[in-house]
Image 1 (cartoon, rainbow, N blue to C red):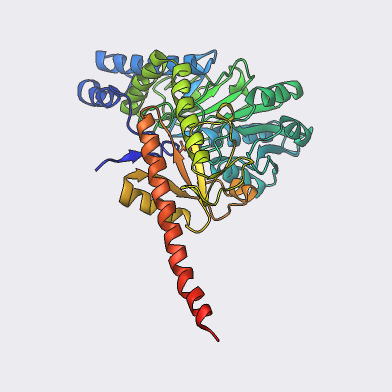
Image 2 (spheres, rainbow, N blue to C red; image 1 turned 135 degrees about the vertical axis):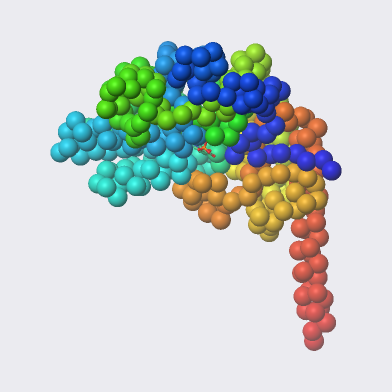
Length: 426
Ligand SMILES: Cc1ncc(COP(=O)(O)O)c(C=O)c1O
């Protein structure tokens, strides 16, 4: 039975050729903790890790591989950036009131650390976005910044609406006022270009396992050199370097990487990055754009509500509404849908059991975004990856049409007895 995996926003599947071979090779041939001993396997392991850092910084145009810090996932990178920044500012001036800014369209990986810090006296602001697209106006972010603000965190691409925020404009705002700028690239890296230098990004949180196509359990925080003076560590421990010292080394990347690395996972990520760099991010984006265009076109033609266009009551997709932008250039391949009568969970179940289409219903760890969009009970999210084909999109649209038709038939059947009963009344 055909299975079409459309949950790439959660984690990408399948991975490019060579990724699992690289993981296996590390485990079976090298095995050692990377770079921490003098024997050949350990030294080669160190080179594998180094190659991964170099490919990461090449991909996002960052200046220094030593400042690409490996983390467990994006959440871990975001926690390090946000809490490390607050800890550092508190240490420098315990009396200074502190303020953080993010948006209502950010993920729980930012909202929850912010709310945790709010419970410890830090003031936080969640800037609203456009209720239809989720787009946030950089001027509104500028407006939210005060002399107490020490960090602005922005979700580059919404995991709910797929909207691409103007990361460059927010970078200019932060640079002009001298506030640290943290970009959450969980949904953008590998899908649309990310440019740390051009956009003045100070801290970039990355998942290794989503658009970068590496294994689960990988992620990174890429820092602009110098940021290590403004971000405290959240964990200390053995680094295999400066071992005679009782305290954490201050040099990069060891400062933020105590403990043994997920070396097999990082070996897999290095291979995935090679695939992306060889294909080129621009070519991957072109492929995704062609699929987005097909999806938008298919939804529109089928009578779904897309953008400003109201729902068509007669088309095969009548009853469906797409959240977020209606232009290819404004979005990535994340499509969140609601239905007039079916819940997101019902839609997901039928799509999987009858058509082999795997999608994610729910609130997608973004409760504020859903409240702002008027969909607090959630939506059904379909998210594309580089191995999805035009034929997969067609199959998905056909499956959606069949589900909508059957929902209409059911609701007509439910109305029919009532109407006939009314007709027979005296
Ligand atoms: C926008 C955004 N930020 C952060 C995360 C957290 O990513 P991870 O699972 O790598 O911790 C996600 C995951 O869905 C996300 O969509």
